[in-house]
Length: 425
RNA sequence: GGACAGGUGGCCGAGUGGUUGAAGGCACCGGUCUCGAAAACCGGCAUACCGGCAACGGUAUCGUGAGUUCGAAUCUCACCCUGUCCGCCA
View: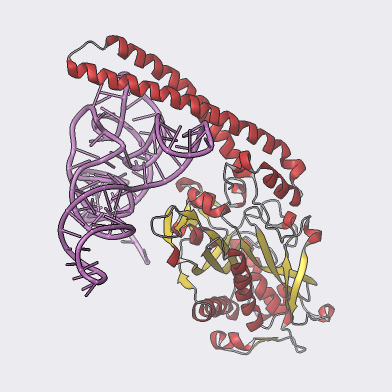
């Protein structure tokens, strides 16, 4: 969420950010209305407070007269009249305030200066590692290979839950557990992250804090009886760990990693790249989250992304780093790198990680602050997060990229101690 | 799920209708003292918003929301959370 003051002081900046996202035409009317409402809101506040000040004076005078044993009937009547007037004014103020808030919740973050403007066609490959296989036509797609090896059981997943819910079996199930161990161990021992284990359902305030709600509520599975929501990513519970808290400067950067299952309804995505493990309703992921100062957050995005890349290198999967253009950058994000791995049999680059810096967009929503120095006013932290990594697409890529001529699948060395074998056959 | 008890400032804690934004203590910041520190003493010390170039003025905030009242931390209702006991349970 944006600082409401942007609507008064930096409307041009806000407008320019929306333009670079390619959203100005769509959002211009909203911005105009928000700007007008914000003025109305302030006028209403001023009026309400003036009447409240009047009432406070009258009230105090009543007290004084009572104490002196004098009559206060007239004053009490006046107070009653003021009270009625305040009621009406307050309603007007609350209405304007709620309307402005609602609009602010609908405005995406402003992209950083080094984010290219335009839609996804302006996404830029900034680096790459390893060589994608060019013999994809001779390879078996992961959904067939997984079934053949007995590690994937898509049909039974669909039976017990629905399409997009995956059953891993045997070495496949152990592969999930192995990936979790590998990733968490690297991030805790080599990258210094604190390991956390967090709830997979959260309340509305948490979903709002990270920017998932209210705009994207339909993307989440809800436990309606308790008004709880299945997390789409561990980013939600972990970023909200310090919601409504004030950190010390010495606490920063604060860094967490967490495994979680991730739940996404994928409403509206039906039929699009949904084969096999490409797009599923429930998947597993290890997530990295950082709380940073505004001064270091941009640089920490580079660090975070490189830490995610470490995992891909250990898994010996060729990948590329893509800087998302403004129009393709997520709602809450100020700048995002996607990591994509080539799945040769599918013939596509699969997004296996998305690393973002949110500036103070999430921190303002979630009210996460830090004190720059003792006695100084708290400021909003900057938040970052990135998948490192999402398992399902990694498993798809492992099954395809590491396929051998005899139909077996080679297990990268880093994974072997956890999986207890060097080959799936 | 049931029965009690409770939610007050960074922390502890007083406060049951009228200068209480809130006593007192701790912590923190500045000063005196000291070679320096501790102790002692003096002073300061919430947040957000509105108006104002500023000085400053105003408003709100005692778990959350609604209500009663001229006036609510104090009274009423609903909800949330915490603790204890009981029940249930991996």
